[in-house]
Image (cartoon, rainbow, N blue to C red; front, side, top):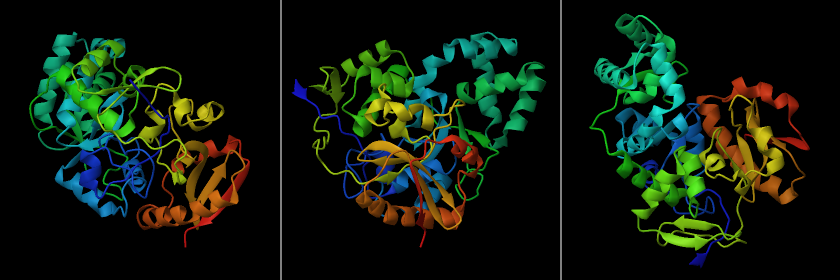
Length: 376
């Protein structure tokens, strides 16, 4: 058994398709590999773009526009029952991995609200997918469920968005998807859940390994027993973590030296690296966990310094405002300036005040130093 460093960061790839199909080998834009097989949290339409800005050298957002428009990259409810942008080739396996979660109590309560058993809900989901042969709004689906069942349509629609094989259909706007989503049936046939979790486990490790069973289970939100079964079916390396914990990684996975310099980064809201581990302390210092993760689940856009959260950021009229939770060296502020300039150039062209609806969270931050990094 080998030993494993505990360093984490963000990686880079040479293009959107590369980032969506590979973990993203580290280059001039970071330390560890990239987005865990291209999986990007997509709760906010801008977040996949900001995530790839951090991971793809010379990222051109028009490439992601085209990938969404062509269906090369799709957006759907997946890991942790939250929205993710993933490569279309891997969507069937990723979705299959989480299907067993749909027997949980919240889903059962939603089915009961519609007067359905689990088996009956699955039958309705099949009908719903047929109705989704073309993009339709959430209101249209709720109306269809109300006509079909006559009760509990709103709560049932929450469950059916996951149970039925649906994708978010691009609706245009600066980030391909607007705040009023449309849904369309996913192509292809269902995959095997066991095989799906094996694929997802390997792709997770390509992005975030070395990692433990608990890490994988937390990221996907599945039982640890299922993860252990998936690991047993894969050809993986076993390593010993800093505290003696058993970790797994893909053979030959890139593991940066502990003292490798990690440049500062401006991360997206709900960035996957902040949610990748059971022990969030690998990236988020414990004293900042409740600062950046709000009570309603919002996960703020963060500043990483040396691979750890050190503050938050948001665009304002003339640049990127960085609120640091600790004193940062002059060299860090200097390194953040070109990063902020490049990021501001992307958001200014598309949505100058992206994430503006979350500004209220800035009222009670433990700010030690706040600076505006100019966009020009």
